[in-house]
Length: 313
Image 1 (spheres, rainbow, N blue to C red):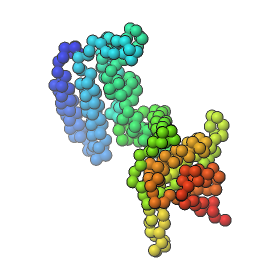
Image 2: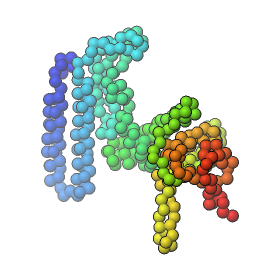
Image 3: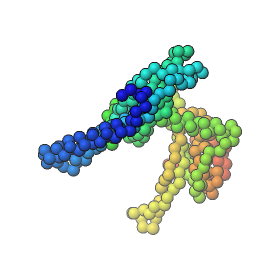
């Protein structure tokens, strides 16, 4: 169909989905009756056909956005005007698998660059992956024991297969984004005094911090890690009437940085958790001088405790 004719694309979108759904239902009914099937097999096959339908639906929905008659000209980032050339296909990998989108492509003769406005609207680059798939992959990469396990989980959950290198890249991008956001918060707090947005403060907030030497491309450096948490008292099964405190609702901040920089990051993390208005702040750590110097600077009213391991004879 010529994309400049203005033909309403919705009926074709609905017809395509209806036709595929009928074909999939027919195929599934035949498959079910060809042999005895277990519930596991039925679940797996149903997930597969659902993914196929979802892929078609997602690609079709993107196609609806791309089907509007293109404007003959659009502003270019260089300040000049880009002209419509043609519709060019682009592929992007999503949580439902790869989809192809034919979208309007514009070219600027002044700066000799082309662009597709729909790419900016949808938030992807041709040949890349969707933000939704990257978010899932980064979450799995950050919580699984390895990137290989992360992609195995992705395959199990979404039936999308990727290599571990993509899991690592998505996870590292997430880490870089989080690091940049944390640094921006610290810069604002120490610059114009903009305080982090805080949640309701608990009666008591616990902070703990430590450091460990790690070998980096620049040599040995100290990787500092801090936690912010509350606690909950739980009964001890082996000692009737006794209770133990357990950390909960943990927030973490880490950086391979000097003590001053890390201190600002930890202060912001604690401020977000309500440290500025909490009834009591307790800091538990070992005896390192830099730790208690930061405690005195950023949390002068806090209760300071040397952890049990280092306090024990």
